[in-house]
Image 1 (cartoon, rainbow, N blue to C red):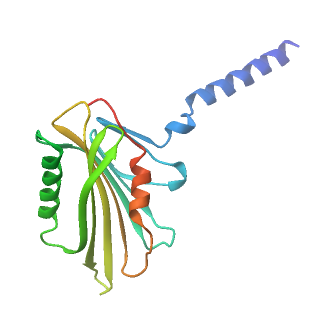
Image 2: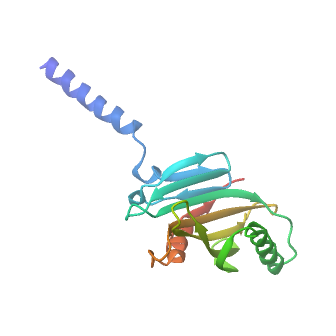
Image 3: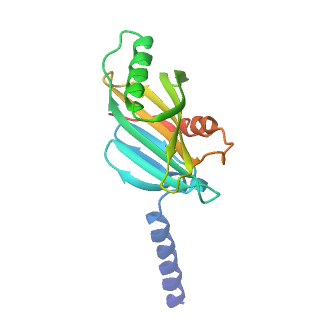
Length: 188
């Protein structure tokens, strides 16, 4: 009888110890950084490529095996703005500098209202030539938001997709907005 009780107690302790070391289901895909938290759906199977205190870079292969998706999220320095239009102009100027040596097909910047204030949403599509002479497209949807606790900081979140020209009819902005809804500001 004592042996049976000891066996039951040991089994119970083993179950409790194993369950307490396992991370909660919801926390497995939460990337907690200084300044933000990005919560990714488990079914998306993102791979962390690079992670630091204030940034994270993730990547995944598309369902067809050829497309490549990338997420970049990081804390950025921002100057003080007198109004929202200065914020939009600042982002437009930054993106204009970054596309100087690229073959941009289209681009657009506009305000995007988020729970914590006004953000700037930027979309761009550029053509790239690859080694095997087939043109590829890099499509990017990004959001830059001022951090609600620090006027000199912001959070930048970008979703990009690289694919062979003419092979994708996905509307990337829909996927990017869905991802953006899982971005939360944390203490900075």
